[in-house]
Length: 117
Length: 116
Image (cartoon, rainbow over all chains, first blue to last red; front, side):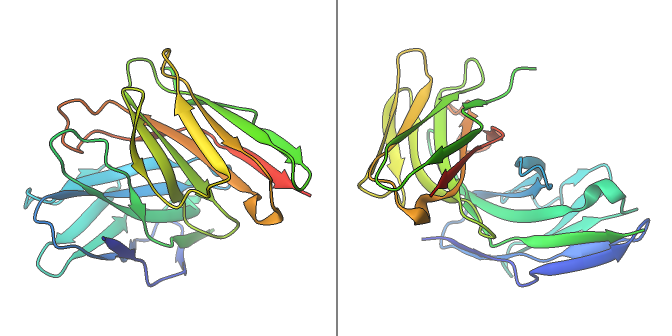
């Protein structure tokens, strides 16, 4: 079974600065997907960014980018120009690739990000 | 755009009672997932349905059951409730046919269950 590890329970960053959240995972599969979800105080789960394992290029979504190191099984999230609205719990998640899809997400334990004004 | 709709949003039950949570996936989505998130914890996968058939099962207690109906809405039934069942229950949906795992899973806003 796959496991996802987030070793930073809490992080803080000054507004407008850059912060990197770490995630490692363990799998024997060669093809899979990785995701970062954001859970603000409202508790809704919001997709931030995703990465296909077979793509070498790191995914980017506006101020959010990832550093995907497949050999090291590492998937970190970089948030640039941090904003107050970025304050949330961030979950790293793994998803297997299948012929049909419908595989579940396996989540890490989360990193709580605080933005300091 | 339509999102995943969950009801009720909040529910208070006593121990040993029964609770039913409902989920209406995004139109045309063929897969529904249920997750349980306890206080300060990450979401734990309970069960999923693909085209109205159970497709995967996680750490779902035997006291819980779920099904997906012909209109694709899903219900999670929880019986003999225990204090430890107090949690946020998420329903999520996605369109998976041919996607091989790459499509986005969209989450509802969750149903808060408190067992007293």
